[in-house]
Image (cartoon, rainbow, N blue to C red; front, side, top):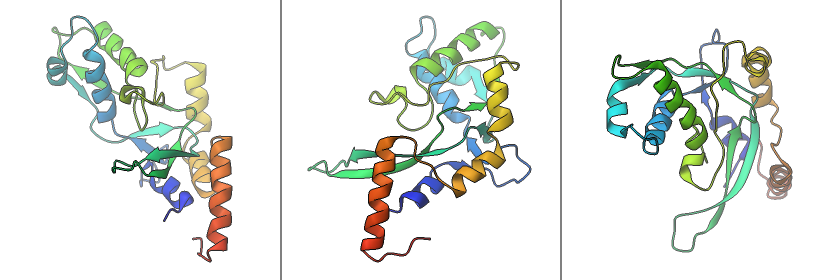
Length: 195
């Protein structure tokens, strides 16, 4: 029922424009959602008010980072909680640029930066993020444009490196590597053709 390699390749947002600096993209609305969730826990902020006063870039933003195959066992929502395998792309390191527009003088730049920083710690973005309770992925922090790690990721983990990783998938961890090996054996044993 599963083709882990194809599921991995289908899981991220892809930017079709070959001139884009990255192959992978992220919806900026994920960051606005994270900020609105963080507003629930921050004194002096109201989620609904922040929703009206903040705007985040609408277009898909390039995200830098080399994707790896991440597989995990999940439980279905059925009565028996049937186990299943979920395959996704994971970016162990990632970076992106984001533009947040806000209503002055009601909000100040520092308060918006504080809210975005809290969103990175408390909510995160993407699948299995901190906000959902059981996961801890998708966390982020604000950095300056000259941050050395930010510059390294942007320089070395753009479109070319991402395409190579999509074409030649590598497991994120030992558990994923073991599951991929099992699927590979089973696909051959059952006589399925791999694309």
